[in-house]
Amino acid sequence: MDKIAQILETGGAVVLPTETVYGLFGRALDKEAVQRVYDLKKRPLDKAMNLNVASLEEVLAFSKNQPAFLPKLVDRFLPGPLTIILQANDQVPHWVNSGMKTVGFRIPSHPVTLDLITSFGPLIGPSANLSGKTSGVLFDQIIEDFHGEVIGVKDDGFLTGQDSTILDLSGEEAQILRQGTITREDLLAQLPELTFKGENA
Image 1 (cartoon, rainbow, N blue to C red):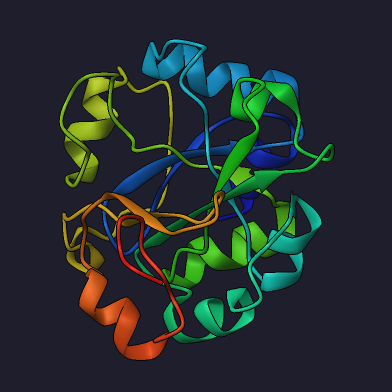
Image 2 (image 1 turned 180 degrees about the vertical axis):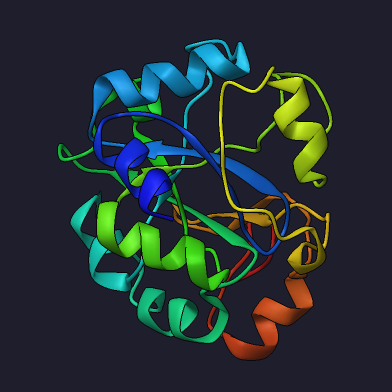
């Protein structure tokens, strides 16, 4: 763990478990660290990254025009397999969200990963795989795919292998951009005030 902390501190990338798949994590506010993750994944630079944070306060610090129900949403579903898209404010570096007007937020529930996010965050943490390949769920395979250029925390048994649900709250109405573990029905059961695009108000 000391080695992993040192790598994050000095701008490197490490493989960490979330509750869904493994992520390739680096410090989001360090341009060189973010570039390292892009390079390792062979990811196109116009594919934006999410911010992995540890609290609602950090979500608020990097976004604007948030819906009134956001604190309730975070309280009911996070940490957990939900990515929330919000309008980005000027605190979000262009190298994180590719200069887009929006940014995604994740609060993973794996305790080790959450502790590291608390200590070194916000972190980027796209899935730990080469771009275009299947999301990584087997630690040893991931390390092999990256030719031993990264280290990390192995906990295959914690993962579901199912990607997070992506909920876009950047507009007037909500949209599910990717269906994952958390369903529209799950969201509405906890937040009946949520209005999805295409529904009558």
